[in-house]
Length: 391
Length: 47
Image (cartoon, rainbow over all chains, first blue to last red; front, side, top):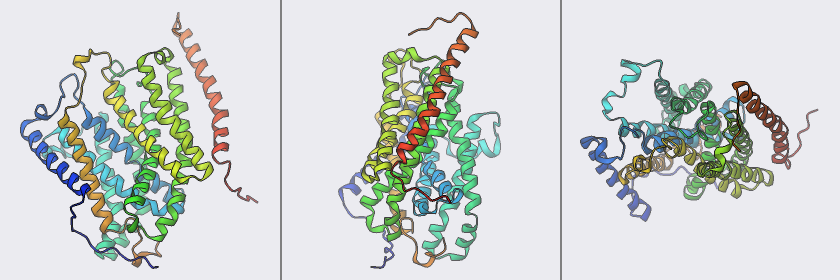
């Protein structure tokens, strides 16, 4: 049976999922007004000792790491020539674009004064600052991802001429995207190099930039597998034969690569322990927490991925992807919040307020809502019939 | 587990020595892990 283009849908049905989404969005709008009217103090537990909370630790650090699927998938398809992953490129680029867009959106809540957003790039660039490098890379990469995604929108709108022009830039955009990702993924880790006395020695290392970059690779792959399994379950009707046929290959190929990279990551984390002689910390409570992160959320999914790739077990790979994604969130939150200011008494430690958590949930919900709208209408999970033979 | 160091030289010899041993181990273990992961793959004819 030939695949039919889905009709443009703007109708919202009163399903339980949509009602929950609506409640979260209304709550989020209310908190947004409170934050921008009353300042950080009105909604957060941030103070001078703990100036970075979950809006940085979760929304920004996890958001950027989990959006790495864009550069990983496009590089494997266009740079390494693995065309069998082609059907995974558009969903990965969309997820990455929305991920980065939400990172910038979430940053407004933390930084405030949105009209000053262009200042670090165009008005007073602090070129010796790592934050400037992160800001510049995210600004450029968001534009790259936007341009990389536009062909889907142009196909939807029937603008074939301009689509053709953008398609010719694919390789250049992919290479630029990989360079920018290498730079800012590692720089996010480098941000913590300035605080050796605040971050617990088990997490602090001179290799933090390397850890952040390497972990972003398997974070991206795991996110592509995880997101693919969700799409398979909830957006099955939006997928054409090519996507359905290629999806198992993408899952198993990425499982194989992710398992190997994760084992390498595990290896360099142990080297980090050895070079700073931090072995004795492993026998403390912090050590147990660190080992849980390293063995439970890196070693275990790496091993499950390996079994899945070896036995061609797609279901197992999807389970591993959930653990790996949780592991990345665990790692980034440990570095930015849990193991940060670890020596302070409990009364001075940071605990996010419920309003901060709801704002983060609101931001993720905005992303999921936009993703659902785009995949329901634009050719992301299927190839547009007019351009089927152009790849 | 706490190791007593008397000089920077002692510290570097100890930590670098351990690090090199781990690196050697990884050089052996990672290819073996790859063989395990790709164990059931179809063999490609190279010639």
